[in-house]
Image (cartoon, rainbow over all chains, first blue to last red; front, side, top):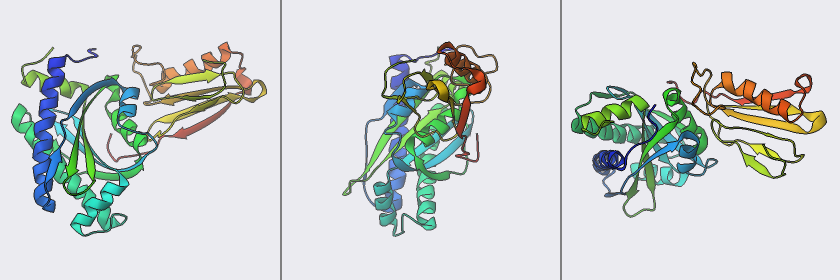
Length: 197
Length: 103
């Protein structure tokens, strides 16, 4: 079992995340009518327990939109909204954050962002990627990230996190965007980019 | 394993035993994972495993605490090695939430 990635492979994955989150930011920007800044993504290949730590404080409450992807690449797109930022986003859309409509709105934001991200990824790699309906959960960050990692953990002890932040201009609000591909999936992506092995 | 009192964070896939009274073993944010605590109260011995998945399917390379079928015997063995007696063990099992409707 391969347990690490070369610098060049991580660089390529980071570039993929960059283009994916750029496309997603454009989609969000046109939805809420506000400019969005995208941070330079980080690509981390970490042992599972370290990956949970890297995501942030385990006991922080967050709202997450989880978007499973099937097809040539099995992966999970995870969007994390800290509570204050979820409120800002919902405010921009004119809905209460702490309501059914608010959660549904966040789920829809996640759906649009995730689909844009996945679409860009598919275009670049030629992989057939199919997003499934998103699920919205509010829980401890550690519980969400460990459960996401557990879905792909049967075949790997290393998690690959591609993490970018989207900053909404004129507010303090940001959301964190993570792609967690399965072991098999990463190999497929790297092969398509000519960086296998 | 440790003898020093304090707090030890038992992270995903890890297991830990202690014979120090007052030593806190903790796991935060279990989600779909399982936290299994075994205690021998008469001798102040405790162990905690933070288990991710049910079966290892013969995978011996992964951390021993990752799969329940390897973690439970390993936790019992570690406790026995610091003097716990099986017949006195009390167990607490938490976690195992269904976080999402897939996977």
